[in-house]
Amino acid sequence: MIRGNAEESRVQKDAKDAQFAAVAAEHYVCVERRLAASAGSARTGQASLGAAMEVPPQVGVGVVESKVARFGAPLMLRSGFTLPGFELVYETYGELNADRSNAILVCHALSGSHHVAGYYAGQPKSQGWWDNIVGPGRPLDSERFFIVGVNNLGGCHGSTGPRSIDPATGQPWGSRFPVVTVEDWVEAQARLADHLGIAQWAAVIGGSLGGMQALQWTIQYPDRLRHALVIAAAPNLTAANIAFNEVARQAILSDPDYALGHKPRHGLRLARMLGHITYLSDDQMALKFGRRRRADAGSFGFGIEFEIESYLNYQGDRFAESFDADTYLRMTRALDYFDPAAATGGDLAAALTPARADFLVVAFSSDWRFSPARSREIVNALIRNRRNVSYAEIASRHGHDSFLLADAQYHAIVAAYLQRTRT
Amino acid sequence: MTKASTRADFEVIAGWVQPGETVLDLGCGDGALLKLLQEQRGARGWGVEIDPARVLAAVRHGINVIQSDLEEGLAGFEDGAFDHVVLSRTLQTMRHTQRILTEMLRVGREAVVSFPNFAFWKNRMAVMQGRMPVSDDLPYEWYDTPNLRFFSIDDFEVLAAEIGLNVRERRVLDDRGQPVSEEANFLGSLAVYRLAGASR
Image 1 (cartoon, helix red, strand yellow):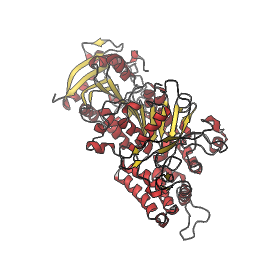
Image 2 (tube, chains in turn blue, brown; image 1 turned 90 degrees about the vertical axis):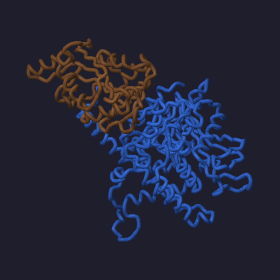
Image 3 (cartoon, each protein chain N blue to C red; image 1 turned 30 degrees about the vertical axis):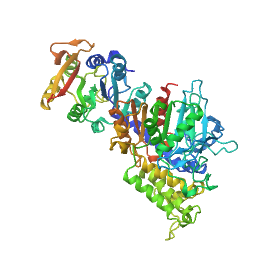
């Protein structure tokens, strides 16, 4: 049909703005809940907070358990370092079908984990970080798909990483744990696929750094996935993004506790505060916090007076409690290093030549760390290679964090795309 | 999907696309044309659409759709990336008329443009009787139409000559979808052009 009439689209936009305002108002609490559970919380766009809290957890995948896969064969990393063997902690939701063709791999981003959905027995607040998109009737429908979440190598949620024991010394690896890359993660994830008897994923999906892994899968193991869902990602980091990562790393590395072998709480806290600012949008921060002050404001000192200060400090504290500094250093480095087109003289289409998958690429309008323009680079390279690709640019005020939230259009697009996926 | 009877231009366009050729459909809606070109002509297609509901519909239909605003040009697409770039019944809704036409011929070897002919005799009759025309090809009331540009087949050809578009083929259809061979600007309700750059 002919393009939308202007009045109709304006009315839709107003309605959408109102919806976003409602979501944004709740987002402060939402993000706190998410981090309180050290994972993302399930949110539906229009439900009030009270209603959301009353929703029984079993509407999602329900109680889940983590499993551990052990791999005895050495793993040669891109750095040249060889891990003698490793463990990956993972979770699965739904049932693997008879011909093992309905498996979806969910790749996590910087601070995520294998705990994608559901909650642990006796811990109703332990909801997975992407619970809102996984479950019966949700876009990643656990009644149709077998969904796998895995904690990446170098992580701090149970897979082999800085907190693990180095078999050579009997001591935790700590800062001696090797730097790992997106390519290394894909290699390790492929071994998990072997372990689970999955020759080919129906889809690999991820947001941000997770989207980079989905993209890398299509290059590294082109025959082992049919669809790649690359969300809020980029073909590489911009200089500004690397700069943010470097400041975050310096916060950790310059914390005196780190040099002494203690947990660099102050450094981690600063790193997270900085990161958090960049994951939100200016608009959204204005909406959520504005210049609002706490009751004890006006001291003419340097305590916490503005709401935004309170929020950032709270987020920093929570993160410093739960996360590992050596993991944080490695996750940010993996982001910096990811650049598949580096091997092809900057030609992304050439780098993506091996890819055989169909693609869904999604970006969010207010995401300034992984902007829509960066996603379009991926799309254009894929079109040049004549790959099947769809691209949705979701209107959102929530910045880079949007990919974790339950925007109706975003989830409808992912659901519609996966509904057409053959299993 | 859009009813085939309302999209007589689709059959014309399908006749110009060869198996294996690539098509970019601008303002692809729910992807009806691309589906037809893929299923009947074995073409490889991608659509461009701005409206979120239509992007979703296209994804539901398994059509490659790129969400983007045509008014911002086709900056994301590379030169000569497609065999055909199609603009079906959309030119009259666009502000940047000349730019989209030149952009189409930058990213495509050929441009296919269809539009309602405001000088169709029934439209002239409507205006003679004092009312703006409403028909299958102009299905809107004056107050809810997305159409911004009101032009005829003759008007389009003047512009095409001015900006150096080479008309390779033209098909004109009446309001029942039947071909019109004479007095196109009077008897034609819908025009479909196959265009190339002047240098070709």
